Image (cartoon, rainbow, N blue to C red):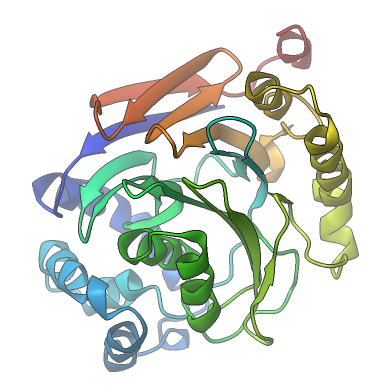
Length: 330
């Protein structure tokens, strides 16, 4: 089991994004229409809701649609309005001892990832790990704001945007945690998510988002895959969300723990998972140092680094499934 990750610098959507999408769209389409083509909103609805809630992204969206070709289904997909439900597991923490750093593990099925770290300049310079074509799983902007998502652990789905595009929008339009929380609280999302935000000042928050109740801003530095309490027992047990949250809280309470030691914890159980064949394995650890404007993407045996000052395009292939003993020995 392995993951391929490409670091790509393309300030505005162009030929390289078009090549990616031409290759990925057949699989995206299977997922997007998995509940039937009529189950997804029509194009007029998709476009009008994007214009209403995230107007600053409309020029980018128009460019993406042109590059995607004459395919109305692709245009609907790219709006990310009311996509099919999807879930992932994550652990994340806002680290504020020293240079503020957002550290997170992204846990998902390695067969269904975009495999791109993109440096873009749509509204402002942004570096992030791409999802669903142009959304983000996590990232930072050059104002010193970082964000990361975690599934909220609820079965409920409703009317709203897919969270990766909301994260993109936050980084394109916000500078501080307060601005990010305000933006996150007003945009409808189609499932429950926990979004952790951190800025250069060391201010942090986690926002609990849901389609059926108002957003809640929780001033906690850590988040896993439940909100105030567990609402989906089977999922919580499978992902060990309670155990991971308690572990993160214990780490944060340790006064002598360094950032390097915290990152090492993310590379071992209980935070690091190898349940790839069950769709819940750690695909990467990301550490966004917002003070320096740099990110390290880390695995137990390899890492890459990028920043706004130095972003080198490259391709990284990482073998994910190793004997457990090799990880524990690190």
